[in-house]
Image 1 (cartoon, rainbow, N blue to C red):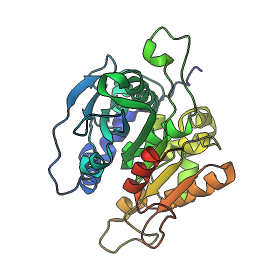
Image 2: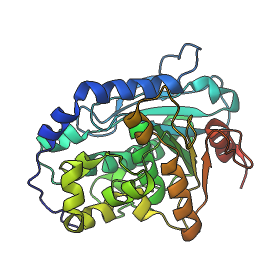
Image 3: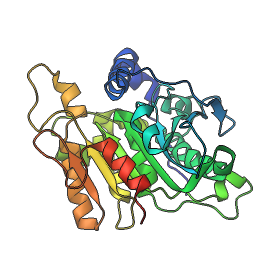
Length: 316
């Protein structure tokens, strides 16, 4: 599919939005995911899964040998390059490996004059899954048990991977692209699961998020939504959600009422209302979608980490 070219200035929008604020929010999200225990060093660091400098990943292998390990792939930032993982000590006791993935950012896409900046992020999300699956024997990983996840902005590529369906290209010249993109489950922490400005406003009135994915400001994306629909339909997880999608688990640390000490925009961007809206779409589509937040537990799973472990270790 040929993407539409948009004249919007992503760079100017990002400057107005404030790179420092975005970076600080990313750090807060990453920090909230990390436990007090010191994170081990990667077993394999800065492994290239593509030609771009930002297409790199870190692999954390649990100690010991034995059967191939299930693996959690965790995505980093969308605007600024980053790769991080949640506390691996949540997963090592269950024999799970963890992979932290850095993707080409929307800033990279803008510099390369790519018409839909989010395409870089989403294509890299799938490529990381394909690369890990293709090389699974090298690291004693189980290619049939791969979970994807992310915190805040990093959850968007994970949701895309879980909702997009099979995107392998058997006829591709690149052997990585011939490998299956299917995943076992999706973990979305403090998530924003849509790039559709209209859908965002319906779920969280007044929120402004994600418009750089479309190459323009949020206000302009609302005005031009009809024109932008082909891109939204191609890349937005809420549109792609279907009955065959991988099971999805959302978790938020705040309830449906904003805590007094939390800044308004921060709350809207990380509100559990996103998860509630997505869960309703899942019910209509016949997909399994869980949403956990204070006062709203999930049957069968204590939290997002319990969900990942059980999904990857339960025999099906």
